[in-house]
Each structure stands twice: as structure tokens, then as C-alpha cells.
Image 1 (cartoon, one colour):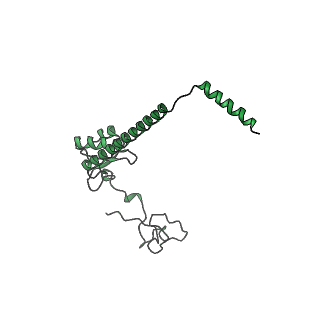
Image 2 (tube, helix red, strand yellow; image 1 turned 45 degrees about the vertical axis):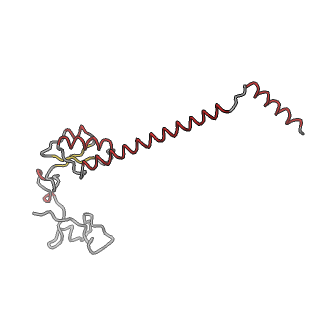
Image 3 (cartoon, one colour; image 1 turned 120 degrees about the vertical axis):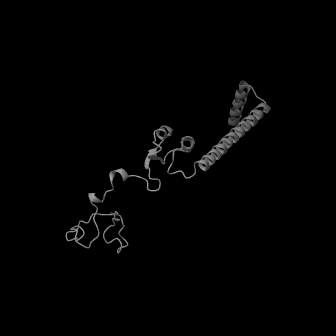
Length: 175
């Protein structure tokens, strides 16, 4: 028996009602009373068999959520398929893709592992080049600052103090 699509009552006729299932609670509701001719109401009997309950329909394998390479190592290749968790970063995805390719482990939410690995490696190379160029520009700026400080003559601190005193004394005389 095919499982019916359980839609909210009157969601086809009224646009403001979403099709997501809501239990009918009306006092005189024919659907709540499960009268003949009304749509089916979800019950335990509509549940799938235990051995096929969570199986992915295209691959006929049980999906398993994976967060790192050690989780990927624990997968049974014949019965399970890996699903990479969404917050996993690029580097760990790259390591997982490499491991999956070496050990023939299937990953559900990665269409082309080879192409993915190439794009991630390109991004990492671009980042490294950008960091290196920033470091070089910082070194150049520091070198220019050092040259400027070397070119300007350095006066003794004692001489500077005397000049400052002279300026302060002369300010008072101008009034």
C-alpha cells in the first residue's frame, strides 16, 4: 500500500493555509471523526517497514552523518552511505573526499569528489599566494620606514629638551 500524502484539510481550496499537516480539532469536523469519503489521517499503520525505513531511495543504502575522517572510517561500504554534515569546513571535506576516493566509500552530498578536490586545492593555493603577497608588502613597508628613520638625523634627547624649554620661555615673552 502506498503511503498517502497527508495534507492539511482545506489547504487546496484556501491559499492562506499551508499544505503542512495539522490535526483537525474542530467540534464538528468530519475529518477528525474520520468519516467515509474524507482524506486519510496519519496513523501508526502508515509507517514503513523497519528494514526499509530510512533507506535512501536512489542508492538503496542507509545514510550516515559524518563530521570527520574517523567517522568516515567507521562506515560499512555495503550497507551505508556517508552524508557530510553541513558545518564541516573545506579542509576536512578535502581530507574526507581523498579518503573516500582511496577506500571506495560513497558520499551522498558530493557529486564529483575529484572536481571538488581540484577546486578546493585551487582555493587553498590562491589563499597562500594572497597571504604571501601581504607579507611581502609588509616587509617592504617596514624597510621603507627603516630607511626614512636612518636618513633623518637623530638629535640627542638632551638637546631636544633644551629646545623645548627655549620655546616655552619665548612664548611667555611675546605677550
